[in-house]
Image 1: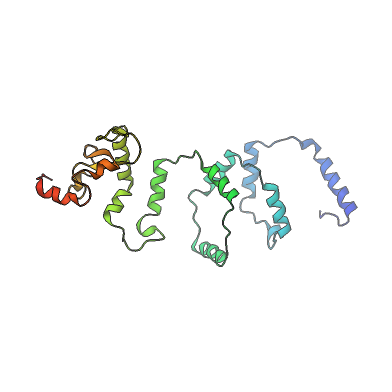
Image 2 (image 1 turned 60 degrees about the vertical axis):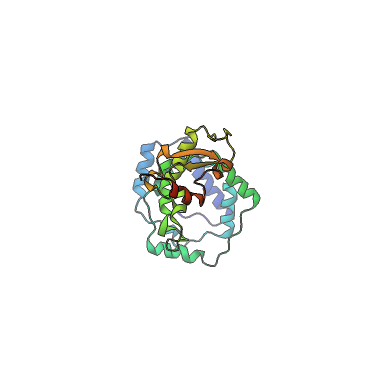
Length: 237
């Protein structure tokens, strides 16, 4: 039955519906009932929404009503699980791309950046998650890929394996320079057997030693001095 047109008749119509449902106030459906109701609606097109466009005023009211309302963790988890494994079709990707072309996005305000920063504090991602993100942006998958111009030493020193090795050496030496005994500050991990000439020993824990920057510069293998050092010393690589 369609709703009456006049305000008075419409108010009376709403009152009758409300009075008829007085017995349901405070009642909550069980999870089984909710699932049955959801299953009965799946696949049924919502014809009353076809061609409907929400007005800008309604969008603004919805936005204002949602501001400051926290999303429960259970709801966030449900939303996350609902999107797992889903991928946009190529047609949808093209539509999304076309809808963003020509748009100018404002830089977040200092207040917004502060809120985003506060929201990230204390978060710790698992090694598996960090490795996955790294693989998604590594090599040819990176937006700034230029055909492999990064020198191999730079690639090595930014790799997860090197960072883990460096952290292990620092922890073993108690974050202390083995020459002057300074703890903390500008510490560097030096290769006992030079990095360039002993590739198989680069990630061995025993081949790393902690030195401060000043003590590191005094070693005979620092910088270009390593060439003369290798000429005067015989190693079995």
